[in-house]
Image 1: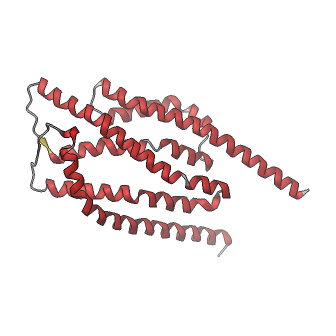
Image 2: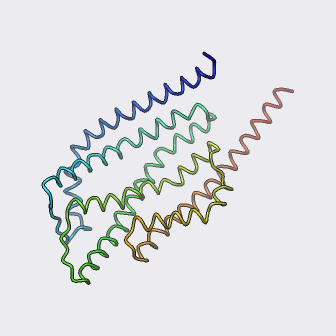
Image 3: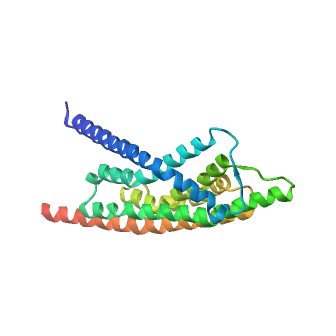
Length: 253
């Protein structure tokens, strides 16, 4: 077997090992989610945001569906740091020593960004969208009978995507360090990116202009922030590579 084949085999074995660690970690987190799902569901039902809204059970299986979905989401959120660490550990051998330390710090930052995105969606966007839909129904003379299954799915549909979207700056920084994207590329596709963000805003929110504006503003801000971060990261990366080449030339001489 050639050295290249052995290298690929070792990489595949390492990838399989890390995927197995993630799976085991998720199973443990999912079990923990079983104990946290009930208090989370009770809290979300009686939070100020849901004040005045009666939640109903339309199917016998609705409670177990909500319970399992909440346990699954809690498990995913809890295992996400482990997923990011295993990803970092897999790619870190190809990074410089100082880059390893810097990229390792991305993990707590990305967790904070995710929580920030969820908080923004839950405390700002979700109440507005929820009350907009309720008032729209009332203005049309429609009596609101909200199912608990639909309520929680709608809640997760709005909050979780925002948690992921808010990690855009750290993802861009990471990909820029790996050389997979450049600030020039991000600048070139800016108008297309805005169009995609507009589509995302339209999917997440109901079809009213105000909701889409509320969503679009932070999305545009995140993209521009990601571009600034990418420029700084790329400049440092180029400078580091130039210094490394100069050191190699000096050693050869």
